[in-house]
Image (cartoon, rainbow, N blue to C red):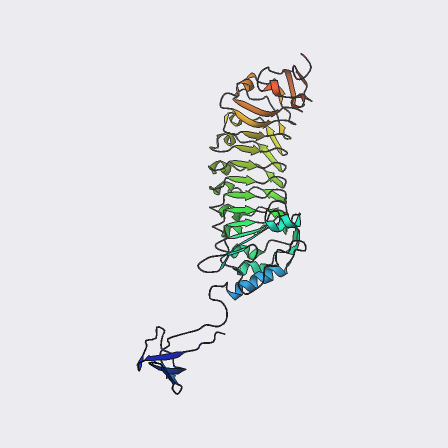
Length: 403
């Protein structure tokens, strides 16, 4: 409770104006006449000249948000670095490790706790972070949060609090590198401002919520290395702002939805090591800015779409599938690959000579197929090793045995 001390001061018998609303408060009345100061009887004072607030700091964080942070901290145990040692005092906006506040409203805006960092607290300890416990739903009482980063602590368990989807200003949710389990919140599509969703390297299960496709501003989606199953949402392509979609090392099945072709900003698509099936769509080679396409370790079948080899894709990995047919003889000056991996498939026929016309191929792997005939000479074949061609039916020539 603030204690208010009020006074009316009269200069040469004349009362000064009070800037605050009239209040029927008893206060001491003083007369200043030259060097003489006289005290008068305490009388009702209808105007206030001076208000002194004694209690909580005006510019500190709200007590309710401080309490929410302390409840959040109570659910976690960090025994080695002492990152929560600074969480003392009344003002959680003042040097609480990993907490940032809005400079105007003094509401908590960001929680940034990374278990792998170059911060001096890690350098002094000569170790990365380790934290156990769970993410308390108390975090949802911080209703002005813009970013929540609780990453790479390796031991945090439990589920993602369902109430996290009630944070209307959340833009970044980064929970990579823990041991979180359970499903992604079904109504995650409520986070309309979300631009980054990263829950990679956890134990998340269940399917991808259909509401995920209702995130119009999502640019970075990282669900790698979890236990997510089911199919890709049919309207996956509704996330028009998406530039990176990383979903490798899960149990996702079914075909690639045609709606992916509508994600004009998509530059990096990694669906490797899942259980995806069907044919690789021709439209994948016509996407405007797609530079990395990793579909290795799935169950795709059919021919390789020729468009993939004359597109802007520079990192193409289709290995460990069930692809058949011959290699498309379409490569040319527009073909530029840092990685072209077609190994562990059922490709047959000869290696097309047009590969020599590609402007650059850094790493080429055609091993473990059913290819036959002489290996073309010249670039890029002159710098490749035998491992790029082994375990085919009858390939010959340098770097293998002579034909």
